[in-house]
Image: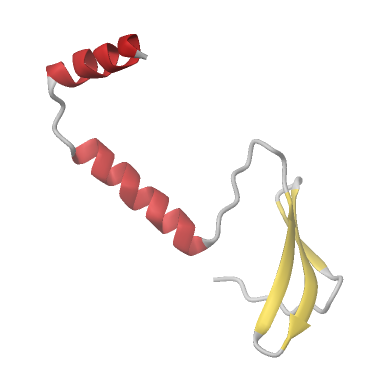
Amino acid sequence: MLVLARRTNESIMIGDDIEIVVIDIKGDQVKLGIKAPKKVTVHRKEIFDEIKQENIAAISTPFKPDTLRDLSDFFKKK
């Protein structure tokens, strides 16, 4: 792990197009601004972990051929 010390309004670069800026520091809380291309998704770690678990659960759900037919029928009724 790389550890860097930064002050308010200072930043670090990740590659050529991602910039992390220290916006504010109050007590034990640090506010960061992230400048990144729209194609780069940015999530808090806990949200990222939830998304990852949901994706794993979706993959491990057994596929039933009738599922697509039921879904198709559902949308036909609407």
